Length: 321
Image 1 (tube, rainbow, N blue to C red):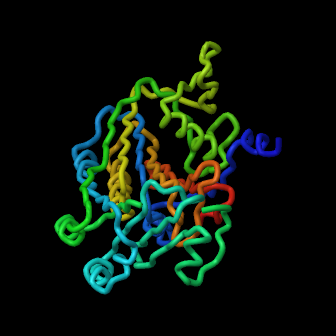
Image 2 (cartoon, helix red, strand yellow):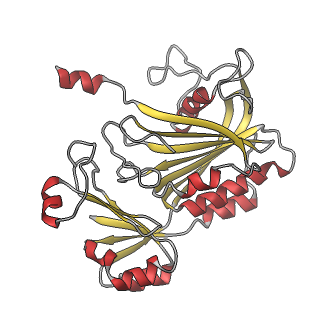
């Protein structure tokens, strides 16, 4: 019965919200993007927009390839040749794929050159390494991002395959959007919605859920928070793959320039989800799956260059930075 009760409990998460301005000298936006290493999905929503600008569309389409290498021995990542070819000449990211962080052996190579291992008890004892117990009970193929010609030639003796990120573009019609005030994360009664309400609303939009809580709808009873406004159309773009932080920073900068010319939209959003089975979330903070595996962040970008930043992880992860 105790197990059944736990399964019925809704997954909990930790979320940190902050506001700043992109022009502020102490703004943390670039650093927080750079230290969230293993990104699986990037989505941005632009209200009052029916078609992306040429610059934005080209940027999305040119995010670039990533690679999978099957049956790669882990010792290949600590050889002098590998370190000289990739680590010392720039940043290099890798993550085991199709492994379960709470059950399987998992490895991640961070852009700073550190190799993170999350091992089960037997494997840990066999390696003879010094480490510390995971806070999560229990514990193949690897994904990489690097220069095309170097990657393909270096790992040519293994089964290496190039992948292109999947891009999805859609226009959402008659979208009910929360009214926001950049100065108020907590919202204002009858004037503006809060950051938490916006966060929940975004999740519903990304899931293509209905937002009007109709009595005949047995799938979703969610309703857009109030106050709200209906926009004629909104552009939703989602990129799925292995996406590097530096690519996301370039996209974020381009989205900030969206308001260089007057627009009908008062704000837009950029959301980033990390791989659920990555051994770390931000920096070297340990991450586990348990009931959800979430570690993600969302920017709400306002026309005056103010922004909200929302960062969320599972309840047993360290608090986002």
